[in-house]
Length: 282
Image (cartoon, rainbow, N blue to C red):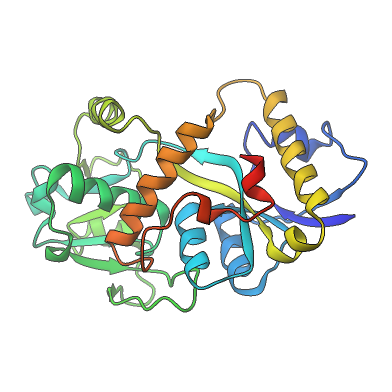
């Protein structure tokens, strides 16, 4: 069975994409999207792939609108988020609470990195998210979501607006440009403290399959999970290693954050994120 699949270039997908991991049951046609997140919108809106890497907040929102997809228990990308928050020093922002009353840019209000950072700011640092003017540059992947943020002027670039003082801070971007400062000056220390407090590394991307594939060919879905795991096992170097408990804790936290921020109508249980086939693969 030929499957159209969207996967990024990761150490743990290299063996699969290079053909070193094979299957007698499925043949994979890899879609070429650079960066990979450019393929999320066609998957959510048009069901463009049978299998796709997917930002977890995009999946949570898609699930809230009954998009025909099911989550696989396969983590593609996980990372700490504190390094993805930068400020214009002229704005006088000192610490997270200094964001209140400021203009903060973010590529889209619904990005997973943005949701993680806002959740951290609100729950760990006491920041009033409603006291920030959010300026966005792209529409959400999920068309039904109503975005009430301030839209950046057409043609404007997020980092240039920060350099020019049109934004006070930016979430979701990394920069070592001397024109900007880190919101968290000691990123490593913040990561260590947050990890000790919560015991999880934030999940950014997982994998989804089309609901039709899961409903009609559960054997194929199980095979997809098998080859993903085989490719991960073949990887050299550091790759995301998530136990069932690690995955559960991270998913619970980002689901709670997403509900708090109005991205989804309520906090789903982790079991609700999977269907009858994929739940059994956890």
